[in-house]
Amino acid sequence: MDALKIMFEELKFKNVKTYIQSGNVLFDVKETDESILIKKIEKHLHKSLGYEVAVIVRTLGQVAQAVAQNPFPKAVIGDDLQLYVSFLPQLPESNQSALLLASESEHEKFVIINREVYCLCSKKPDGTRLFSNTLVEKKLKLPATTRNWATVNKVLTL
Image (cartoon, rainbow, N blue to C red; front, top):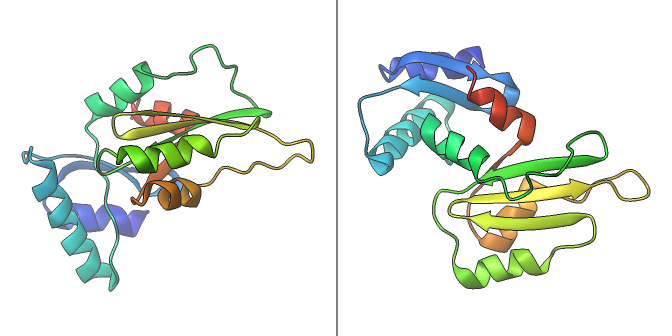
């Protein structure tokens, strides 16, 4: 994460902070056009790392909105029940959204709101969970980056 922080500082972004080993990078930048910002970051990461990295950007206000629109506000998150948010680069197509929603089970409930997918996930009787970022990407045919509820909330306090 130290190397990632340096890569963002090389882009002349201000107040760069990283949070845990998940690729969360917080920074201040004057650019407000999301597509320009994403292209700039992706180009620099490709140059620095030697491979392409899909970048998904949210403002702190957008993260706060994702927290506020939690479709499972009464869920008691803990060891047996987890809430995940998958952030998407764009709105999913309705037919792809339908495929994801159709994959729900008694252990996984999905809600799609704008460019976020919420998954309330309980353990199966054998203690495992089915949910993964790959599931969201395959069903929606979009890149996604998924964070657990604690991480999403922690980002707002950094």
